[in-house]
Image (cartoon, rainbow, N blue to C red; front, side, top):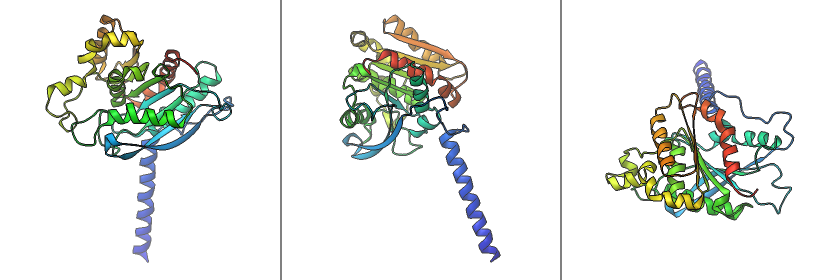
Length: 300
């Protein structure tokens, strides 16, 4: 009986540790997000699955935040803000740690932004598997195509979106910031606003993703190919909004990228914010990020 009791206690203890670690992974030590009492209208969250031949027919989780009033206004169409997680990462961290939905509810209540649909796809085959949101060299690793083609199509088919690149923004944190720039610059007609939060502009030499070919690294390094696409970006009115923290190891890259954007006369805003490469920085600066997306998009 003593052994059974000990085993039961250990099992309960391990379950408690797992719950704690899992909750910490989701909330990063912050309390669960909740609208303040003065916010009277609330958005809703749905989770859908999107399959893509680019990733071998895999079905990927996509979290969708619908703004307050979406159900009550069946004829209204909305701009969309696509948000990319980092690595390691999951899309629900954007909702739970960065508080994306709560922040939209609050700023809508203050009449500071337009209502937008927020879309948070899962861009990996596992929490700790790095994809860089890129089309990799291995079979069934077309994560860029999954996002830019299949997720966008699925959202346009299922929700009342404004089906135009002028009404789409793409942003993300860390690896997701790199991905938003790389995917967005490759598909600039699909997204008007590109945002990078503590991201980078030079592809890492990850052989499992980019292989050995230098031209593939260059193709996936926004700083390298920016001059080649500058005229198109100016013509399409692409707006790049990005920031880096003073304590971030990518600050130098981001300053150099801002200088290149200015030299090429591409619309942009670059901020240096306090903090480091941390959830605190991403959480505190999301109100700025969603305002920038709202101001840069049409419709809604």
